[in-house]
Image (cartoon, rainbow, N blue to C red; front, side):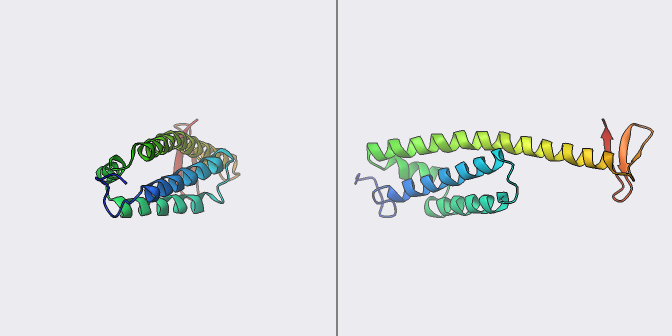
Length: 139
């Protein structure tokens, strides 16, 4: 153990374990988003949120995590940085997949509203759904 490591950080295994959990949760979320599995999405998001809370509880803010990682032996520090890079990549991918899912959902809602028998069209070219009073906009 490095001299700079505190008793709460010991050998770095807790950091690696938590980072592995974040990576696993984000990988699971990515798989669900890619397969359009919206039924399990809520559970996956809650799991990821719980893991992130554990990380925050253990190390506080980003500076606390950085201090803990910096205090680790070189090999463990390298492993942690690799995990963080993987997490960053997954976050970018998941953000894009969430944006696509949101667009897909909006398109499906618009299509559904347009094809409903009770849908009416405004003079501005939008579709109004009588039951909601919402105007979906021009298409």
